[in-house]
Image (cartoon, rainbow, N blue to C red; front, side, top):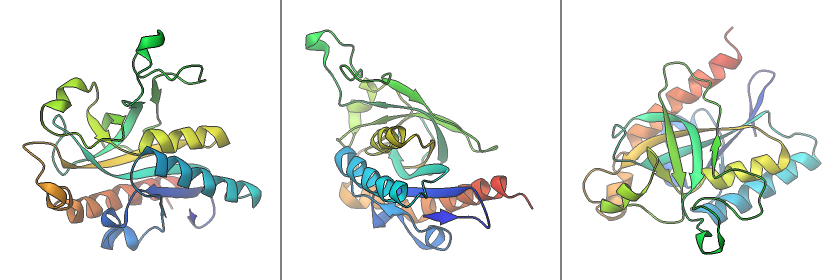
Length: 205
């Protein structure tokens, strides 16, 4: 749990230590969930339940890390305006792709974008790393593997969430792990600057 001088209280959520580098380490101590929707949902739910029991639920959860894109600027940082779950397809039983059967939420969920001068983008969460022509089938600006799952956990506890993602890959072909990690130091610096803006907005003095 991270908090400013008084309130609000923030819980920052990230997937891996790879994305948590020098600049973010100087500012926050995030929950590291592991990669993918399942790990993100489990990790976030456990932490929020622990905080609920301690009567210390956060005022805002911030899901942040890297993302892929062929629409947004490589190395750019974006607030997430909305998020969907690309893995869900129950169309054989009559539900539109993206709609979870019998659930209490729409296929695409809108998120707050409170930061001025930080551009917004739409996001698709899934359990696959998107490369090449597979981007063409996704109706979103960015792709990641955790944000939708973190949001579902937050909704269960009635806690608001925002998303911040930096574009680590997308153009061209992804050259293994190195192709993903090459820009992570730059994204660490730029995500930290966005976190600074968030904390400053809460306590402008």
